[in-house]
Length: 292
Length: 135
Image (tube, rainbow over all chains, first blue to last red; front, side):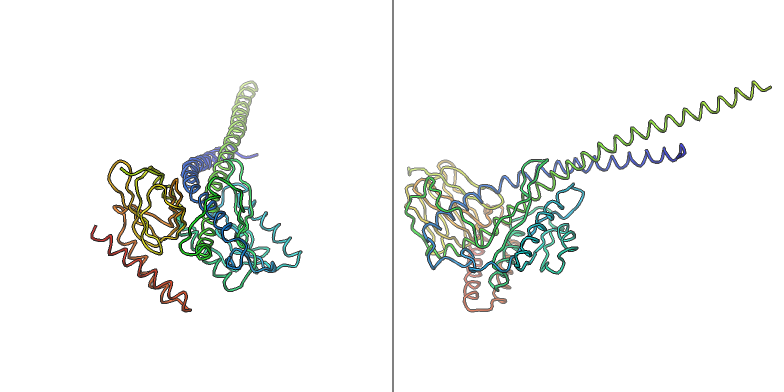
């Protein structure tokens, strides 16, 4: 049985923890709002990009002048997985969810006899994947120092991926990230980067317009596709940032609630024990007086 | 008074401009061009340079863009810029840094094609610096 002093100490420490988790929750809520705004602000660009890309793909057709980034190498032996996770923990199952999803994928690919290479974006995913597939990880990108995600960060990753592709290091690139559905639900998603999966000819609004291209469509396309890859990575990073904050917020919320429950339980035990001690002392005094 | 059309300037970070304008000057890779209403559909890449927007009401605004893509339709014009900043907010140090990076890229360039490309990019950046610094 813990003494009264022990109980008092424990209640104090749980209270301190509760204060911290509460503060973290509020910080996460504020950051979530900002991350969501950033994700929303980036949406018009990626939408336009997709529309333009669909349009121009139609113009070029499947012809020979389509760049390799789009058509791929024609093989699918070596797979590159870009796994984006958060830099920090304490956000519930967020990181392990993405990592588990990626791991299932890796297992499937390995079972099919494919070769797998991994690039880890974010520290947490690296820590998790390192245990099982440390020898497959060829690179990691550290974004810990980054305060606000800029397009430059995504562009650097995209450049790395494209360079590897140009060197013939892999055939298929897939991006793993967590899609931000809502504060309480993030869905791990896999998205193919190379060869570019373009929504072909959905025949919307201006698709019928006959464009003039300056320079040639093929040239524009080879300029556009690397940019599109960067945009996709950028979007993934933003969704991840929003998802991380959402997950952190709900994790910290339940941590705060748990701490509250614990404090209640401990105070009941504390009060009961204190009362028991008082009663015991009273009995001792009374029985002592009676004995006289 | 010229006819108005819809112009949008988008960078990956945000939507900078979305308004009705009379004309826009775009630094296309193959030369500057002024877009007005009912322009024939054109798709063009753009080089680092200054975009001048002449809105229906108010004075012209200028933005510095670093590469990107323009999608022009009779009904409107969309500029997808890799990064875009209003000229009055431009940071000289930022341009200097980009020029420095371009120089390094040029030094790193291995084959002929990438060297030509890097050289061109550097040239465009220095022209741009010259164009906006006195402003």
